[in-house]
Image 1 (cartoon, protein in one colour):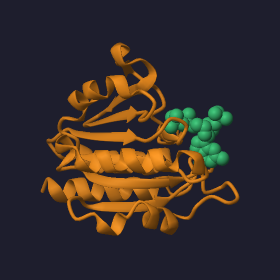
Image 2 (tube, helix red, strand yellow):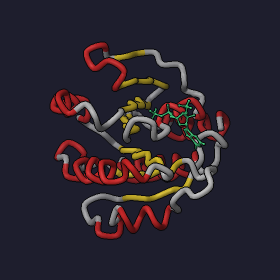
Image 3 (tube, rainbow, N blue to C red):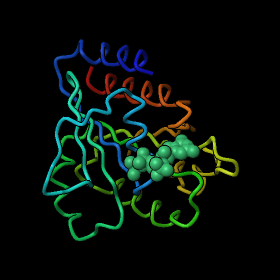
Image 4 (cartoon, rainbow, N blue to C red):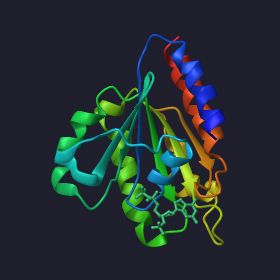
Amino acid sequence: MGFVFSKIFKKLFGSSNSFNIHIVGLQNAGKTTILYQYNLGKVIETTPTLGSNMEEVNHKNVKLKVWDLGGQKSIREVWDNYFLESDAVIYVVDSTDKSKEDESMEEFQKLLKNELLKNAVFLIFANKQDIEGAMTADLIAEKYKLSDIKTHQWHIQACSAVKNTGLGEGLDWVVDKILEKNK
Ligand code: G3D
């Protein structure tokens, strides 16, 4: 994965722009595990006012910001400041957690409607595919009504953060779309 990611960064590094990718989703969806698999687990900057809800990693021209959504509604307004200039949202779904399905779908819809994210492309990771009984990416696409999205480019990718499957493919899609948009 480190190799895949460094190849991707090389692609991005050729550009004079800096890019912001937000990894978001409910707590426990697998965001931190994904970040570690991308070999960027060393969190070099945190935002104390937001506590553990946000981690930021700067790597060459790419800023990766990792967010927990849900359960922290009181500070939600503050988050908007950090969504400024987002190039891509990676939305992580725990494909095994049916109890938080509605909350996750609600948060996803809010992100789609967020003015600050109007130029962002959306990658949805259907994570935890290694667990038996996990919802498939197709089923999640149907539940989240992805085919109704007309405002953003989107893509859903089945993955397992612990087994390290699907993560490279997903990020490849994100990078290609960002580069296309910034040609
Ligand atoms: P978060 O950053 O979105 O809050 P984490 O989520 O990355 O901290 O992951 C939450 C828990 O889910 C962790 O387990 C982690 O190991 C597990 N997890 C993440 N991705 C996967 C996956 O693809 N498959 C499986 N089986 N587990 C996954 P713990 O036990 O440490 O809380």
